[in-house]
Amino acid sequence: MTWLQLKGDPAIRQGLFSQCRIESDMDRNIGSVLDAVDQLMRGHGIFHAKLHFSSSRATLWSATDPMRYRVYVLEEILSPEIGPAYPAIAYPNEACIPPERIRPVLERLKELRQVDENMYLRAGSLNVVNGLVGLNFSCDGSHYLRVEEFLSRDTRFWF
View 1 (spheres, rainbow, N blue to C red):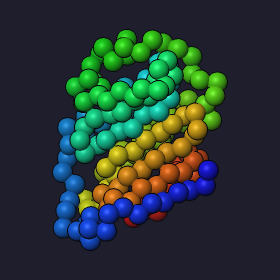
View 2 (spheres, rainbow, N blue to C red):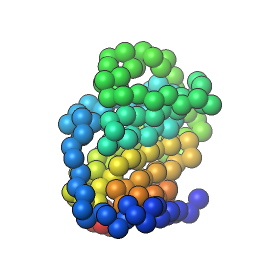
View 3 (tube, rainbow, N blue to C red):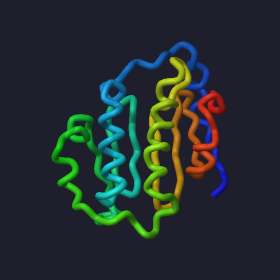
């Protein structure tokens, strides 16, 4: 897949500079959230994770039940019971990216969330099987691109 950029609602783009990011509960707990998601993706069969920073929730797809995604609020993501909810299984052979690339992607999502008050990441996703990152910004623009291309761009590129 080549880089795909989709422009969103023009009304949202027009009002971009009249809004600013408000710190969410997920923002305040971002380190613990990234730890949990990293662990779930590396050793518990989660092959696709989408972090909804603004609404403090995560959507997870599991290799053991790939046809159904699960939505978790912040308290569930941070609960010690989230790991046992997904059995420990080997990292998928079908993965396009090695497990050590998961954390750098998650950290870059955090940077894009925090770098600017007006233009910021609302939601970001990672799929280790197809190797794609999905981004949804406050301007309502969306991007889908390969992990390596995503990691090759610093935060200034996006703004």
